[in-house]
Amino acid sequence: MSGALIAYRWELRKLMAQKRMWLGIVAAALVPVIFLISIQISKVTLHPPDGPYDTPLGLNLRSSGLSLDLVVFKMIGVIGPTLIVAIIAGEIVAGEDLAGTLKTVLVRSLRRGEILAGKALAVLTYLVSALAIYAVVGVLIGVIAWGFHPITDLTGHQVSALRALGLTAVAMAVYAVPVVAIACFAFFLSVVTRQSVAAIAGTLLYALALQGLSALSAIASARPYLLVGQLTAWHDLFQTPVAGDAIVRSLWVSALFALPPLAAAWVAFTRRDVTT
Amino acid sequence: MTGTNDVGTAPIEARGLVKRYRDVAAVDDVDLTVRRGDIYGFLGPNGAGKTTTLRMLLALVRPEAGSIRLFGRDLFVDPVAALQGVAGFIEEPRLYSYLSGRQNLQLLAAFDRAGEGAATIDEVLELVELRERGDDRVSEYSQGMRQRLGIASCLVRRPQLLLLDEPANGVDPAGLRFMRELLRRLSDEGITILLSSHLLSEVQQVCSRVGMISSGRIVFEGGLDELAGATGRRYRLEATDLERAAEASRSHQAVQDVRVDDGALSVRVDDDAGLVALTAALAEAGVGIRALALESDSLERLFFELTEKRPMQVAR
Image: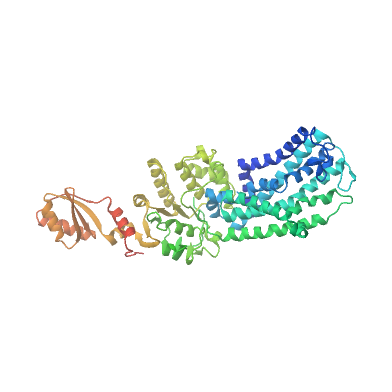
């Protein structure tokens, strides 16, 4: 087995043994639950096309449970996924640095790069798991509350319930791409700050800055190439015919945002002195 | 318990190590030689540069100058290859508190690419007397148990060279005795040990050779006997006539220093021959010797003299 896989396997075991990881998973599961409850509570006072109904696919709320996950994406903005990835990606190296366990594992037979790769893969696995839990819980409670019905897509066409379910799964994967880029930044901060709190707070500030930047009218033409814009690339899937431009752009823009911090983390981790 | 190592050269050969933090030289031109089979005491007061040196020996810190060869392999050409057969911990063993002792050892065995063999892990848990508590979380361990688990984490690697930084820290007297016996046993099995400590008394009891570091520089390296020989030994002498004994001692060429202390003489003599000559001179002066013994704290005094003052003769 390669060193990176050995490290990855044990990173997963360590994550499973930590409350922090379960906190993230539970938070991901609770987001659609809280949103559904708030919609149900406000159904007397809030009507289409206001509030959540005024979002992409929002008019499908309360008519098809399959719309819940996708509408919540809009509601949680960039901060929701950032919080959930930062508590793990920001801690996974810095936490070990602080606890002193990094120096314990760095004197064994795996190379530093292999250990870092194992950690990066574990963060990715956590992120995918959190999104999957979010998706499954959202679809389940949405269908229980509002039924397994067709939805109306962004171009006004009806999409069958089964096809909408499949598209939702793909949308999760597309949504995950820019979130991975955010996770890479948190990972980088985790390596260079050596402080979990600083890495998590720094990642949140980064997300807020990205959001602020995308709201500036002066750079409106650059907005499609900013990371926050990629969080809506999944809209391509809910058009008839299905488009792909935004998805392709999301892939390369997210890569541009992900690779530099990842490379910097690699350089810093493999060359630095471990003095904690 | 030891693994194989195909290189027949010294376990540690460090030459000209330098490490600075900002303008402060934590380690300044340090040479260190640990021979096969040594229990080598690496002594120095807190902040002298012991831990930084150990960090460099384990490739956690890169020196600004100098070289380190472990069993003849250059540590900074390929750290993973050079650290084969080497295990240790810095400051204190740090393990995953939310995992059990056994899981920690399994993790480290996996990181050694040695598999997670239950037999080996049971063997080392037994050796450090933690088998009964192996499935408990490390967060529930006492300090002494963590120290022992730290030793176990090294032994899982089947090392030929152990680097231990202050392994007696926070350990109670029974734990200290256990630790000493364990180190002697491991040495008997052929493991070379470098034991870093600021406690001379601990090092005296188990080590065959010592290196002393002060303000980042090695001030002595050699056997404990050489240390005493290089700096002289101090004896407590009780005599029938203290004044005449002091007079005879002061006028004797083998005696370097005479102090009257609490109804006895404290004399510094360089070697055994000088001591024999002194006793003969005392007899000739008509002084009866009631008791003559090496002062128990003489090495400790030497330690302070060496580490708090200038560098002196270095024996290799």
